[in-house]
Amino acid sequence: MPSYTVTVATGSQWFAGTDDYIYLSLVGSAGCSEKHLLDKPFYNDFERGAVDSYNVIVDDELGDIQLIRIEKRKYWFHDDWYLKYITLKTPCGDYIEFPCYRWISSESEIVLRDGRAKLACDDQIHILKQHRRKELETRQKQYRWMEWNPGFPLSIDAKCHKDLPRDIQFDSEKGVDFVLNYSKAMENLFINGFMHMFQSSWSDFADFEKIFLRISNTISEQVMNHWQEDLMFGYQFLNGCNPVLIQRCMKLPENLPVTTEMVECSLERQLTLEQEVELGNIFIVDFKLLDGIDVNKTDPCTLQFLAAPICLLYKNLANKIVPIAIQLKQVPGDENPIFLPSDAKYDWLLAKIWVRSSDFHIHQTITHLLRTHLVSEVFGIALYRQLPAVHPIFKLLVAHVRFTVAINTKAREQLICKYGLFDKANATGGGGHVQMVQKSMQDLTYSSLCFPEAIKARGMDNTEDIPYYFYRDDGLLVWEAIRAFTAEVVDIYYESDRVVEGDQELQDFVKDIYVYGMRGKKASGFPESIKTKEKLSEYLTVVIFTASAQHAAVNFGQLFLGMYPEEHFIETPVKEAMARFRKKLDTIVSVIAERNKKQQLPYYYLSPDRIPNSVAI
Image (cartoon, rainbow, N blue to C red; front, side, top):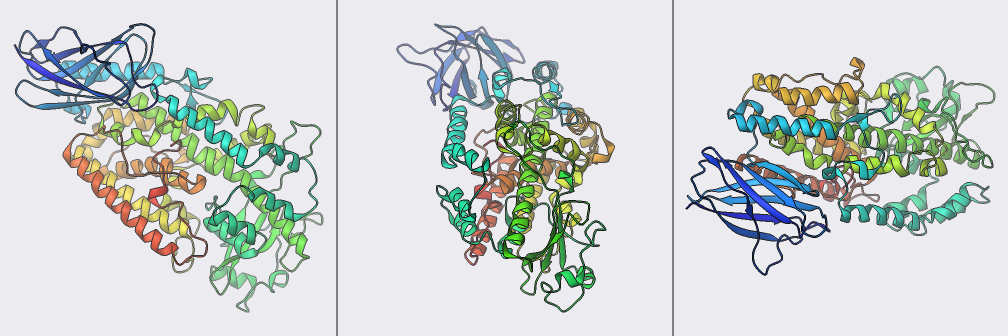
């Protein structure tokens, strides 16, 4: 009788193993096997991290194996089981891989296909078409859209983390890691002491140094020693945690009535301010988004304030960016003076502090929360709703949305919810942060997520003219490496533009993002469909770059882009493409490391060995 060798790999994360009964059935082109209990005498099967093998003997020839069914039944009490993959050795010696990388909860059954990536047009067998359809029908019931706040990108329909589908929840290890990291951050920043400091008047600027007592690294030490200096202030707009706001000033704004006479002591080329603008030496950061945002009033005993500054910066003869004028409100007037470097020391310093405070609010709520976390959640939900696990684009992107929905759900539970940490610690808490997201949606465009286009739109693309913009330089290297990789993957699975246009599952994925993420706004520039291989490659690059590199640049990542520990792809061509992708990333790491040797303040946030795959890893 035909005999199959079944190898079962259990996950290595906490509580991945199970004591439940595990049954396997084989579905072939010539018939189906009986249910077989996978069990070895006097052996603890399916322990955490285990790889167990079993012989399965069937009565009749099954033909080509098309599906395998895994059934879990309670032994003593319910426990979840994380199945990584199953490998099947057929009677003729062939090996078939069945990736899973899913939790099997309670008493349930899952059906797996072999690991070869397939478009819908590649499936000609009825049972495979049916499996594909049922998987999406089930997922669309589990992954539902919900409006958390009016005007926001839609998010997952779950009130709390435990309401999420099991496959996208934090596993126990990651959940504990999240709590420990949160607690450690609070400990390091001794938040209660900060809260007391923030809610009372400070007596000395030296109080700032208390912030850095428990944070010790090259960057924090440099900032602590030089934070009051204009050069550090300008550098942070280029290579700090929010390097996306500075832009070349093409024309002085009408609501900033600054003159040459006011700033001439800062201009080093003996030119007028207007001439410096024409030469491209003037830059601007405008915080108009904060104008009209409600200030936090959750604590009636604490008065909080918001500014909406305009900051003018100058590229000096050393090609360094320094501030030359700051106006703290949008409407000019006698009660809204323009602060200058020639003012009294502490007047100028306080003006810069207000700008940095405004930068913090934009960074936390827009650059970080909206433009990486919430956008990546949209990508993730659409992925699970519209692309089956066998689809090559699902296999490509799933690592880049890992735990994204989970961490965002936790944020809605603990951080940005009513009475959450935002309300306690931020001047935009109590609803202001919600207003900011609502206002910023009009600027959330597809082109603004295409890194080269976004850099060019701000007039910051000339590397010779602006030589110390490492965020741009490193970001372009990483963007191009990702684009080349996605182009290779697209070439493997799509032989022509016609196949791209005819892939209905792909089109549904893109449409879900447009309709629910961008709320169907044509002005967003997000495509409603994709018709060419080139456009698909760009789109996939946007998804991966946003979730990995862009998030790392504004959040300071851990690692690692290009590493795919879950082997959803099994085909040799795509594995070779992954290897080439990793090699390119290694080269970028070396280039950045060599450059940083010459820098007093190194920039490594976009070094690929520090970029996590997703916003939550």
